[in-house]
Length: 57
Image (cartoon, rainbow, N blue to C red):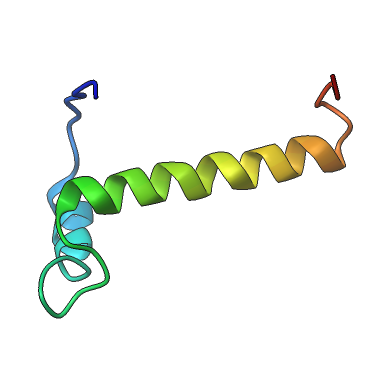
């Protein structure tokens, strides 16, 4: 699995950390970021499909 390094504003990281850990929705930050990327890409695919921008092969 590739590693990616990004800069994240402190306020966004603080908000993310509220959802990570024993009482959170995610085990760790990496899992939270991966889930967010997947959801965003799925949403963009849905929008593209509605707008007719996806070629069905």
